[in-house]
Length: 259
Image (cartoon, rainbow, N blue to C red; front, top):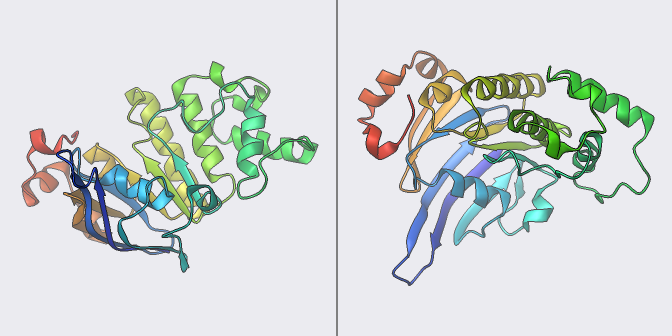
């Protein structure tokens, strides 16, 4: 489903601030893989997601999604293939527009994103049904401005928007890091339900090792712009945080990973 081959990315090349963010990165995902990604600050986790999404161009290497070469495709043209949820709940939604209007824009991903023809009753019924699955009562507030929602409600809505039209790949960039623990747990549960129900191929960056172990069928660790650990199947199921720390000699203060 996803192939990253010998990806390289250096920021501020040739200056005193030169930073090799991605260094010969190799990664392949099978259809339906739910991969959690851990690593210290500066390991290249978010840069990897930004390269896949087209936010930054690669210096060299190959990005192939579902057999299609994305390497040189502009960011806006990749949107039809990707769903993404960011760390900041304020991103991914239009605060001054209503809930149903935000969903309508997401539903038109890959097409002209305009609402000139309005939202049909059938569409509205579908949005109401989808919102009800979140268990947050948003189906009764469809005309409410998104800016009035709490951070957790906005992040749950963003997750729904990112998956409303099944993406080839779902990118989750520490999407619960800005939420309180109870709300973060709720959003993670919703994430697992949606990914499992729709069999979405997913990359989820997290700083929380418990979450990295608990969710998904595969765990990778990045360091210095490369994948240095790749665990899947029964080995991942049987992992504990202590095992991970000891097995790979992770220094908590350097890796900055939450237990």
